[in-house]
Each structure stands twice: as C-alpha cells, then as structure tokens.
Image (cartoon, rainbow, N blue to C red; front, top):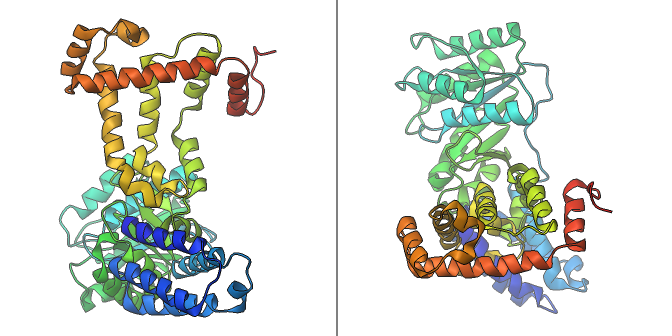
Length: 451
C-alpha cells in the first residue's frame, strides 16, 4: 500500500543517517522531500502541513542539536510523528464491555462493509474465541442480506435473518435482543451504503446508532479512494461518534494517503487493514509497526508472526531430521520449502517486512520472484517420483520432456537443477552439530535421539 511513499522516504532517511550535523538548511531540504512524498501519496493537505510543522519544530530543537547522531535522531522524529498521525500508541479494538459488545460498520457503498463484517467475525472467532452474531440492515441493495448470510456460513458465525420491508433501526434492535437472549459475545451490525454522502443515509445510520448504542462505531473506507475517502470520513465523523476505522483493499495499488489522513480527519484510529478478498485477510493495525515499514525499517515482529502462523514446524523438523540422519535433500523437499514460502505471502510480503529492503524492493522485483517460485514448482511437478528422489538421472532428453510439461524453457530446468545441487551440497555440510542446534531451536530443547 505504501510502496511509493516508502521508497521515497527510505532514500531521504538513508541520506540523513550519514549527516554529522543537522542544520536549518538541510532540515528544510529534507522536509521538502518529505512533503513531496506525502503529496504524491495523496495525503490531505491540512494533514501534511501539520505533520511538517511538528517535525520541523522538533528537528530544530535541543534534542537533535545535542545528539551524537543527529541524522538518526531526525529519523526518530519522523517515526514518532508518523505514529502520531496514524493513531498514536496502538489504540486497538476494544472488547472491554458487558456482552454483547455491539459493533456498527458504516461507510460508502463499494468500500467493502459486508465483506469486512465477515472478516471481522472470523477474526473475533479465531483470534479472540468469541461467539458472534451478524445482522444486515441494508434493505436497499439487492442480495445484501443473502451475501452476509453466506459469509456467516463461511466463517462459522450466526446470522440474524430479517425482512427487507422492516425499518433498519427495528432490524438492529431485534438483532440486539436476540444477541442478549442467545448470550453472544459480539453483535456486528452491517449498515447500508450509498454511492455518495447524502442526508437520508446519515439519518438512517444515526437511527440505527440510537437503537443499539454501539460500543464500537467503525468507519469502513476503501484505501484506493484517495481524497474521496477523506471527504467521506469527514461526513461520517460529523454524523457518528466514530471509535475507529477499517481500511479495506490495502493490498491494492493504493498510495496510502487515506491511511495517513483518516485518523487526522475523524479523530478515530485505524484498527484494521483489509489485505485481500479471503475471509482471513484482516490484520490488526499497529501504527508504530506501520511507521517502521513506511520508513524502510521493516517489521520483524510481523515477520515472526507470519512465520509462526504459516510455516509447518513439523515439516521443518522432519526435513532437519532427514538431513541430519544422512539422507539426501531431494526435489520433493525443495518443493515443500517453496510452497511454505508461498503460504507466507511470497517474496513481496517478506521484502516488506525486512529492514532496509524498501529501497531495493523495486530492483529485486518481488513479482518476478513470485513468478520464479511458481515456475520452479511447476518444473518439479513435471518430474517423475524417481527423478525427484535422484535428480542426477535427469539427462538431456528428460530435461526437454520436463520443460515441455512445465511450459518453460530448457534453460529454466537447467538453472533449477544447478541451484538444487548447490543446496544439496550445503545441506550435506550442515550435518551433525549444526543440525542438532537447528532441531533444538525448533523445539526449544535438544531433541530425543541426539546424545
């Protein structure tokens, strides 16, 4: 989402780190670059002006002037102000209330409210172990209620059925009564959207709000909307006492301006990011970690969480034991490792979270890396079981057959086999003590079977 902003700010940050002194001249020069980066990211102008003034005031203060590393100190100020602009220390999503906790979702049509309702329900069920009931008060959009009902079936939540002839506020009140009777932990209320802000829409959402007195009023906004998102945020912020925002389609080619503007315009922090179409593609938003990523510092915590969530530790242990016992690392093992990488979101997802990689990301081309992984898996799938076990038997005629089966050039097969041979040599070199330590790290102790 912040690719262009990250690339530009990372270059600025790298230049600053080498500075021995910070003066008013080079602060002005640097802030000009920062201002241009924020304008290109479609951040609202009032937000940019406030951000630049805050950074300049602190950068020319005593703290930076007396620092042993002024450049580093200036980067710290940029980070601090980015955190503040996106919501300060992680505000998060609060469930500290007498159940059922009522969550109201509001926003324009097309922002992804109904899909977000399903994602949020799944997050509450899987991450928070909550019992969730959902209701749709959208009586205008055809099949809106059916869409939410099917999403409930997918994520394991319960759905409150209603007639589309019933007033939306009455539907919400009836769902709340059912949530109390059914001893639900959370009630999610999905409201209707419009293609533009109008008074009828605002009046309807105010009536629903009055009927259920929500604990969380979340503004759902499309990250791709740019300045339209800012205008909608202003209107909904005036109509409702918003407690947070959910930024959808954040995995698209958005410039990130909405994320940096919505908090300032509404006063409500961003609490979640929608990162894809699947029901599990919802991430809790952490301003501090996002600021680190924008400045090219990476997000090692997110990387560790991603590894823990997606990597099959039993498979990793099996492979380590296999190599430690003297058995060869084969093509099936390599395919398993490539598939694990795909589960983690591919090369691009990893580059985003590694410190110092932002400025090199374009040169490395994450998309090319992901295509290469898919190509290599296709090559391995085109081999026979015997060829996967003993790749040394793959001669010229076999390579031509494999390349045709995988839809690639013979050179691609040659390249993969060469890389594999190098990996196999490395695995053999790791036998013994190194593998023992690796296995110990996997389980937090020395595994059985080792002296």
